[in-house]
Length: 79
Image 1 (cartoon, helix red, strand yellow):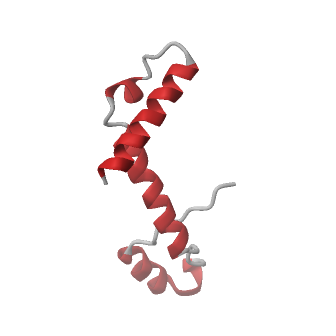
Image 2 (cartoon, rainbow, N blue to C red; image 1 turned 60 degrees about the vertical axis):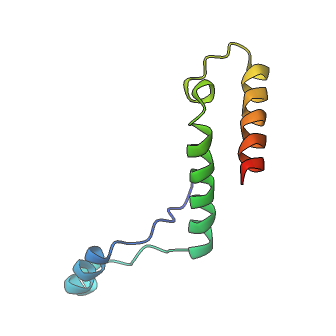
């Protein structure tokens, strides 16, 4: 049930217009939702730079969560 928030490529816009009525309805694009999605993806990519978080070698969930919190704090303080 998650809606796509990726903008439509410019070449697809031309194809859609050329097909006229058969081209269908253009997908909805929410600029604010796209900005939020981009922020979340960048955060996840920064967290994945931590080897222990990327490989998930911790045996206990609490240890993984602690590493996640530590990485988040260090990323936040470096900005």
